[in-house]
Length: 406
Ligand code: SF4
Image (spheres, rainbow, N blue to C red):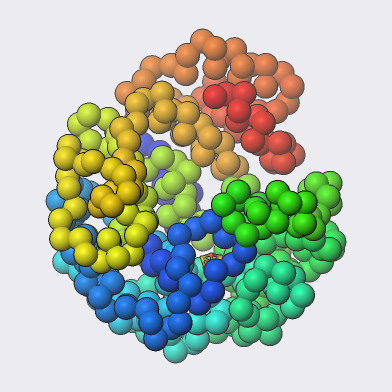
């Protein structure tokens, strides 16, 4: 799927295709840098079948709110969805097909090297999965240990080979760079090795320290070794140059794809498309006649498993112990700000007239227009009156540039 095929329309967001995100919250072990909702469990203790039934229950109830909408993408994320197994994922996709046409839909499943095999890949392909997203994270045993991963470099490489060889048409790999002790040359070598195994997509994220994690706690006590910022920036540049030399487009700050293999689901987020979130702790954002709302399902697995009824938006009371952990109405200013923050991560930037039309707005507002011109004068954005983008040379400073437009 090319980016052009997803070009933003002038139609309201509520009539554009949607994404569907499903969260599978279990992992074999909690990684010290991870702030996703994940519950550490032994494989035999994961109630995969009950979870499938519950996700399907939720789907059936939420589907009414998006009836008739085209589904552009489905993403099964986590946690570690490769622990769900092919049967659970197939049953969920079957239930989805009962309500939506999935003919042209990108269907991705996140997998970890320790729970992925060629056999699992082939079964996922049979269930209709079109894309494996593999959490490689690194190719040096000591750094994988530092990141708390259960696999080693050999296991990571074997999993990439299996993903590429299995019947699922496309493979993406996630890698983390900027880890203590790493050089720019090592970061470039890792992405080059994975790229040369035949993946079509690669996400390369800088290690970030999130406050609610084990790394966050160590960092607060000054006990977490970190790479100097300048070396991390060198890693970013080295990764970019290694992947571009191999024919990958750097289409988003942290994402690279062979032509035609952009992650359609994530492009949907960056372009502000609606998505339904299903599963324990899942977030969803949808437009309706009153504007848009965002929700998060309960983060308690016991509460999620016991739910029989998912309240419709007008009946939601969010909070601990409720079906929804969070619920908020998004006003048009909040939506505009998000569209700018996310859209400016893309190399293609934002087609501003289409974005404004899809939100029912006419202008960006005087203050933002003024700031845009200042940023353009400093070479920090490209702006021709229609398309707004941050040039690649400025991507390392994207957060600051975007903050100027807030
Ligand atoms: S495997 Fe992934 S989701 Fe699970 S704890 Fe590690 S980083 Fe988080």
